[in-house]
Length: 203
Picture 1: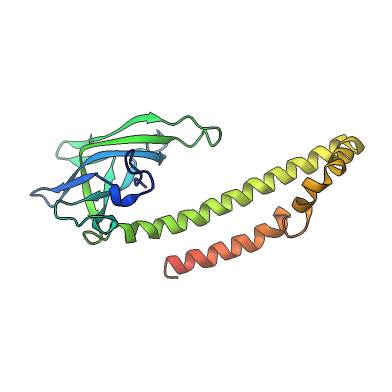
Picture 2: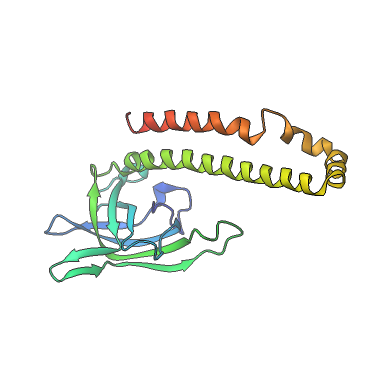
């Protein structure tokens, strides 16, 4: 998902990326995006970017955004060639270092319009809503992993670790109750996520 731009941050109404149509029915996109997860990597032969941009006749604000599919490589008469998409840099993060968060530049990159013109934000939110559920499940997974590691530490070290936990019981107690215990919350979270995902996808 290529939404955020340096000058706009979370205000999608300030997006400046431009898309110009050509005689082949394709579009040429130019602009900059930032905080793009997986914007550049070598895990796959091609990378497909979903980019929010503006057509020349677009109204102001977020209602004027259209959604475009912009691949890293495009097919030509001579085979696959590099599209006008470049990674300008990778953010330095405290965690999730295996997931590259990139700054991307589009220089008249070939793109394909998805859905209707000026309906890009509505189309993008279909994917964003699904991604939010996936991030929530990622958080549940991290909590479960942390709980298992802490339990394992207490079992290995015995009374010493237990006494440390109880000395800090005012801070720890809320996290050890059944309502906050990761295994107890994981199953209903997974179930709710699947139901929500089915609603989003029309299942």
